[in-house]
Amino acid sequence: MSTEQIIAEIWGESPPRQATAAVHVYISQLRKLLTVPRGAEHPVVTRAPGYMINLQGEETDLDVFRARLGQGRACQARGDHLAAAGHFESALSLWRGPVLGDLRGGLILDGFALWLEKLRLECTELLADSNLLMGCHRTVVSFLYEALSEHALHETFYHQLMIALYRSNRRAEALEVYQRARRTLQAELGLEPCRALRDIHQAILSSDDRLEAAVPIAL
Image (cartoon, rainbow, N blue to C red; front, side, top):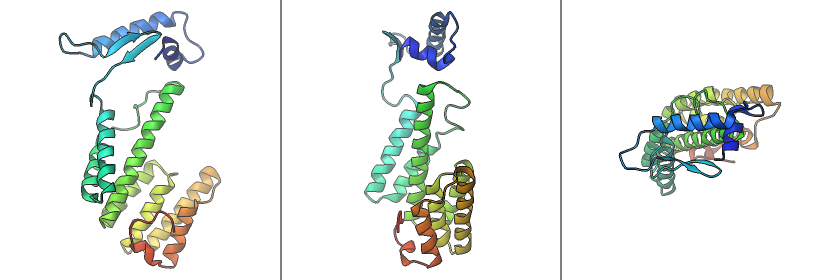
């Protein structure tokens, strides 16, 4: 990452006069914080026109998260949903609050945080799917309600929750979830629910047999 990019991330369009010198100080402090074995190369290295963090293998929680997510995908692809759920749960257990905490930055850092949040949402969706495929409908209901409390505009969670409730013989509650999704989307975005949600709603009203089959993404 170039020194100019670091300056832009920290101070935006109004950097102090001694911004470059300040970056050098920050990098020096970072190197002191990151201890390494005697004789080993420090992970923070100078590379013109700036600096680079050189990490090997699974040295960060992000590396571990992505590895577990990949393992879960592989298990799900071959039909081992129990193992898949275990990997997805293990991956999600690494999260501690919002992405990057309360740290705020420029375009690069914010884009990175958005990418991480998308990975987290994908992992959450896949865990819910694994539980639905195993028939753990009642278990996944509370999990999805919690997910929606944090991501009230994420339509996939409503979709999965409606299926889980229907399969738990809670048809009226499943229909109410649709109305909740509709109210939220209209109030926040001025939009109607997506086609997949509307189809699930209609399928529940008509007790469509396909709702009892493998996880229906679209009807």
